[in-house]
Length: 224
Image 1 (tube, rainbow, N blue to C red):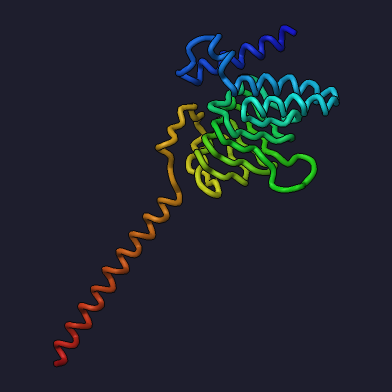
Image 2: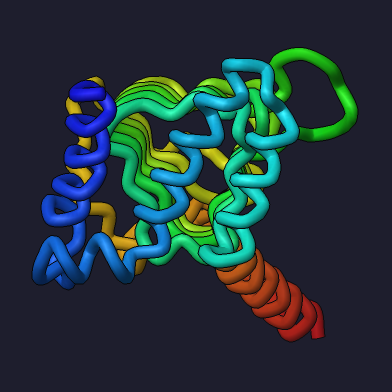
């Protein structure tokens, strides 16, 4: 009982650590839907482990109705889990989430089909998954890694990495712990970088074409 109370208190405390808008314990406990979803899941998961699957699903569906966050009761979630502005978050049955993980609104930790067994992601400690990101399949998001807003991740993410794009690509991996201060408006964009490189190549080709045209004109004039 004491262990459960301690975990519930940690769920509240992490909100004050991560959300500057949090002002009081009363406000957080009564108005934060992400916290309500986590607490409901912890209760539903207990019934799930007792193999009372129907009761577990009823609790999770009631929570989904009131919070807009869908967490399957079979998912395993660690300590100090934080869902910020959680509307539209979906967490699948075989997900495994470590400690100190942060999710933003619209994140999906889902499967890729009707496969059996482990079919949802494993998210390691201290990971951060930004708004609208989709992490699909039985893959691993490594410790201290970040996934940028709107990314679609289909392959394992190494520890201490930042992933962006569709499909997700690792753009930072330096072996140093990445702080949870992800700036959603200042992420590397591999697609934009590639478009810029192609634009430069087109400009160079145009210049070369103009030089060839000028050379042909000079040759014609010399012949005449």
